Length: 74
Image (cartoon, rainbow, N blue to C red; front, side, top):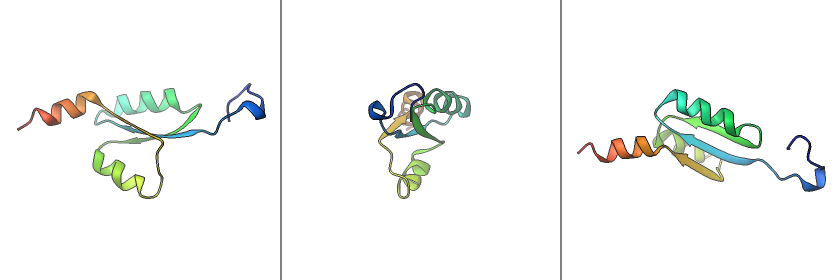
């Protein structure tokens, strides 16, 4: 529920996964999103998949840096 918004105009909080290997980046994004979203911090895609079994997200935010660094390690 948003503060300062009439009940009739309020929208339900969206569920967001913040997937990032950097703990500080996860914490910053979770803090930015927490007022209007239910955000969960996860350190890996495996953790996100496991969490999604019980708590379906509306949005999954995956770190570009993490994805890029994983794809260049061959």
